[in-house]
Amino acid sequence: MAVKGLLRGAAAAIAAGLGLLLATSSGAPFLAGLLAMLAGVIALGLLVAPGRSASAEEQPAEIAAESILPRTGDLANAVEDPVMIVRDRRVLFANKAAKTVLGDHIEGVDVRLAIRHPAAAERLIGEGGEDASRTELVGLGDRDRRWEMTLSPLPDGSRLVRLKDRSEAHASEQMRVDFVANASHELRTPLATLIGFSETLQDDDPASDPATRKRFLKIMEDEARRMQQLVDDLISLSRIEAERFSVPREPVPLLPLVEQVKMGCEQLIERKKSRIIVEQDNGEPIVAGDRTQLLQLIQNLVVNALKYGRDSEDVTVRFEGAGPDMIRMSVIDRGEGIAPEHLPRLTERFYRVDPGRSRSMGGTGLGLAIVKHIVGRHRGRLEIESRQGEGSRFTVYLPALSSKSHATVTEVTRSSPKDVPEAD
Picture 1 (cartoon, rainbow, N blue to C red):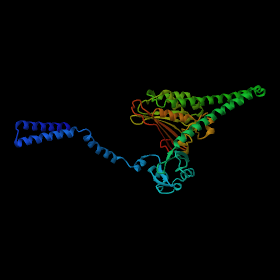
Picture 2: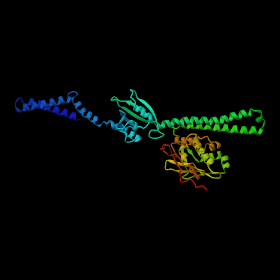
Picture 3: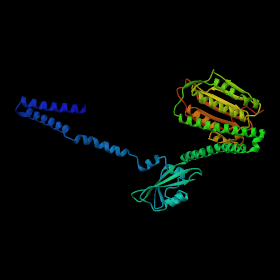
Picture 4: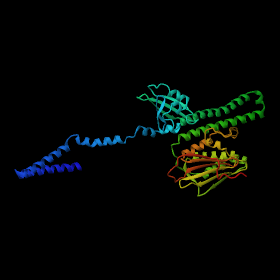
């Protein structure tokens, strides 16, 4: 719009000058018209001159862009990984992340004092190569932390040192290795029992004794069922993990699932001389979920409560509202409780507080891991609370049927629940 206005002004000046020239041929009016016409021509020339106006406008913009670029130190401090510049065996610069891990004193000191690690010192005081090199550091900053140190040569002879935290990746890899090892061990034990007793039964003497034969066959059956349960749990866990990104939205009433679990646990309930008490408020609890997986979740929690609760003590399954979007289901037992140091690891695969007791009860060590993954797939939350000598409470928050938003799965463990009933 401004350019158009200038063009109109210049054209008007030229038109006025031409008018004056035509109106008179001498005197001051003639000179004024000539000057007006020249002014219009000059204005038009400035507007249409190629490149000059554009460059004049772009140059301040370039200067402004350079002025707002952050300094190198500001950029390095914005990096989450620890970064340092080392030259002549001294730390010339360290960003905030490096000072957080190694201390505020590291700038200007010898690299062997800045990074107190033998492998790091060996690499840092050596001659720098042309290519970047990587070194694994264990225990730097914290005993259990693992870092990957990368050295990159710079043109002025200094070296850029970057530390990458690999603790979580290492923990995940260790969990995978432990899982394979534990699964192999859990399968190998019943297989060895089956092979041993089958070989024994092939002998004439044990086979000729009906009582011995019956006892051996019963042991073989128990071990085979244990192995079958383990395989089923492994398949369930794999299936749940494969579907973790698919949020289930089927309307599932929870009370019928509890009744189905009660019917399936009749023998265990009779043996423990216990009852399953169901408490609810605000009507029937209905959640958006996967019916098969929710049944497995309730079954795992209730069976654990019966197994580890005291004989003749009830197991309570309580349903409550937890705001407009969630339903809270608590499974409460009155058993020996769990020591606080075990709580954070209860949902790890094959983790057992008492391995011998768990195996004698037929547990596979995967029940709570399956519960955790089912809760995660439903975008819920799992809380584990326990007090030794009084009992434990496992609380699951699940999205109500009308819920439109789902909370990110988290897991909380506490050692002193308020609502766990007092021991008799």
